[in-house]
Length: 207
Figure 1: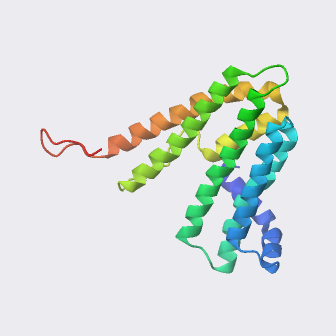
Figure 2: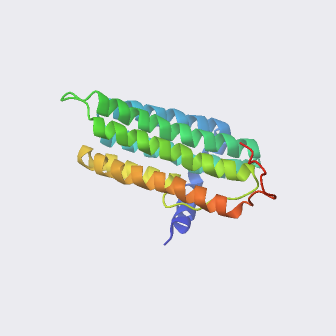
Figure 3: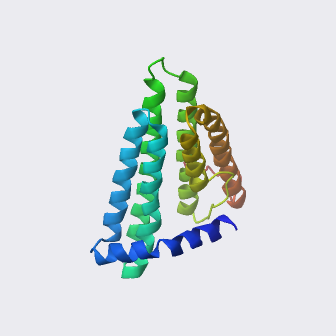
């Protein structure tokens, strides 16, 4: 079963929860905000050193990302604004988790871990630039969905590492740092190859 099929199967299983949220009068925006709040709490838990419980809470918060879209389709309120906000909340939720990890590795009882802090910075930079290249590509009329490691895979891998414990987090950060930055380069090359160059000799590129 591929990731798409797995996601569709999971959506079918949470359908009763979507119906329950609708009966409670919840809107997709309310569900998105609740998910964002839960992921913020998970970052705080991770910062306090409870990686396993923080990962569980983060998974719960991320699960709302699956619910808000289905709820919008159920209520007939699907919109570009909703998709935009959902995407922004996804990135903020991921940022909360990395902020918690940064605090954790900077304030450990036995001293900070500078290597882990540098790796977290690299992963965050790679995550931001991966998203930016896609957004910029769409801004100039191109699509960009290629990538060695996109957000969903990135979050799943990091969450699994947190569930396993601190011993697994640093090696995973090494992998994510390399993979996210490689994804950025891959996307830049992919989009640049599809865009036309200067139409005449001496024409300056727009910055």
